Length: 162
Image 1 (spheres, rainbow, N blue to C red):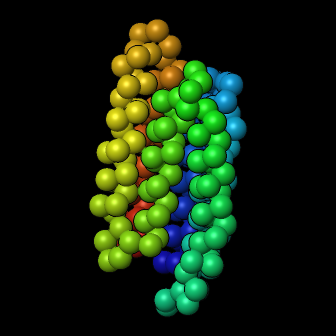
Image 2: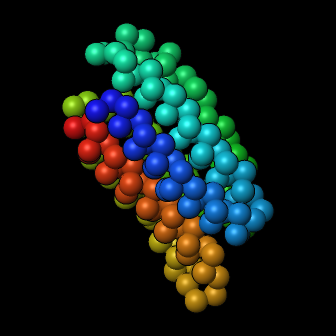
């Protein structure tokens, strides 16, 4: 079961994070490095999960989460610089959405944390979808990819961690 949880996480990164990266490339500009920062954070969390599955209870959880926290911080810094630009809503959506990766610190039921984070993020995704509906489908695709990513993360956590 432990290895299947890692292969399922790998599929989440390949499919769901991959869809966000593809959508960001279609938009171009600052969205490309922002999506790369999201991917880096999810890959850092994968490394944490690979360590955690070998332990009954991780002894130094915060140290193990250091790379994930650093990647989230980098994404947050990038998003902060983008906030006043053309992709400000996108940046805020990512900043809110990445908080979902803190699910590993929520016990015993982490899925509601992901749902709460997704709900907060959806404020910005909905603004993007309304603003660009009918004029720029690439923005709508990007917002839906981010929304789907958090939904898929919640499904993964529900299957493997609850």
